[in-house]
Image (cartoon, rainbow over all chains, first blue to last red; front, top):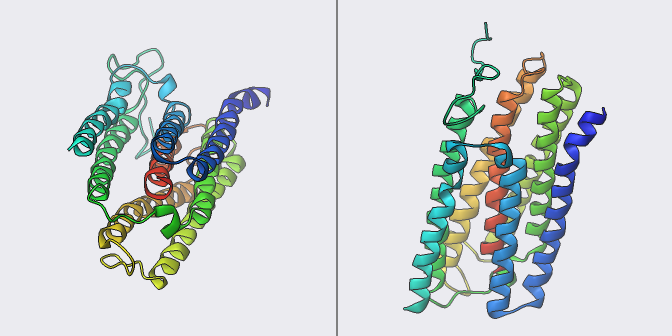
Length: 90
Length: 204
């Protein structure tokens, strides 16, 4: 029982963190405007998505090529950000 | 001898050099999820490009964020219940496995119910797939395409989880969490994508 409690504790902490960050997101969407709103919301979304991948999807404990495969979309996201920067600067 | 259809893990101490202890099913699911992430990425890039074209309504005003916030919270909760289900399978605790899997399925069904209610409400207020009464038609097209594609994933996840739940009834996964972990990867991915969709489509 104690082993189970020990192993589930990090997940409950991540759950609380995700709920709190979602609350902050909703508040920021109402309170902020312009660049501050974009920067805050994108940073929070990336942090939340990262937490789900790292802890819930166990990327934290994977290694070798599996970790590399899993982070491929991040490379694609960087490419997308580059494309969007070009659209914005046009 | 493993049961038919079992995901065969590498024997203890004989981990694959490239993928460690991950079994073939897990690696396969990860590769699928990566390609799926690319698809969502393409849709979100298209959304951003079209939005830059101008005459874009304020999403928070048009869609409202109360209902989607509730849906977000439910998906986050279902991710935790999914993790607890995996723990139940690992510890051969069938009661816990069935209970937490059931809670995860319930979360998915509630999410789909909320999405149905939301679509119904928006359509009655003039936001169709190709038409919008007070703004750019592309707003509706991109909204329904992206959230609908995600909803299809939730539906697939609910069906997938239900199959696992039924198989769990006779102890198929007692002490063997491999299949439960694989369906968990899919479910967490659905949650991860929604986190991004919620931000980009509803909040920004």
